[in-house]
Length: 223
Image 1: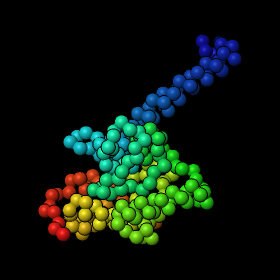
Image 2 (image 1 turned 90 degrees about the horizontal axis):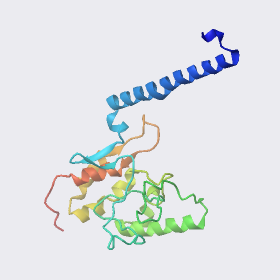
Image 3 (image 1 turned 180 degrees about the vertical axis):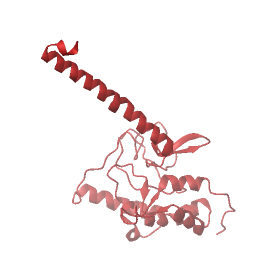
Image 4 (image 1 turned 180 degrees about the horizontal axis):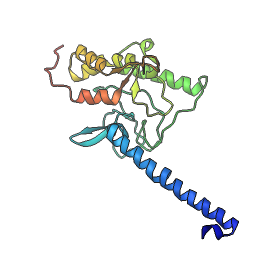
């Protein structure tokens, strides 16, 4: 019966059959197969690399976030966030929609788009250098680059090992813990280059602070 159709109509029917076939294969079968393989072989990654507390997701190790003190006025969106000295801090973030969420706003990913010679960028780096050095109690000249510059996405969860180790003394003092204990914790979270030569060594701040939260209790250090 199909052969007796007019040539133009036969072409349309053939095209429709191919559309239906490829829709089933590429729109249904392939996504289901990839999803099934992902869930079976890489379930943690496929579900967002979530970090959970008591079975409830509290963060994703793929997205940076703020570790700040509570706002004095929670309803004041103009009040800047203040970093909490008890936590390792991420690198700066330009992902701030200005709605009170502060940097690392997951709904506003992006960079500052300022060039290296832009006076605004130069000024912001100088301000960050002074603020971070005072916050961590170190020399401004000792700060690594990622303590002063934001990532392209504004949501990078990783910092350099140098920046993580630089924060040890401040976190140890705020928590009353031995600095050497925290250096060991940082060392346990240092990831080497991929395949030994791709990228740089890094520390995931989200995972590091999650481990810090669950660090076994110890008697405070006496000064």
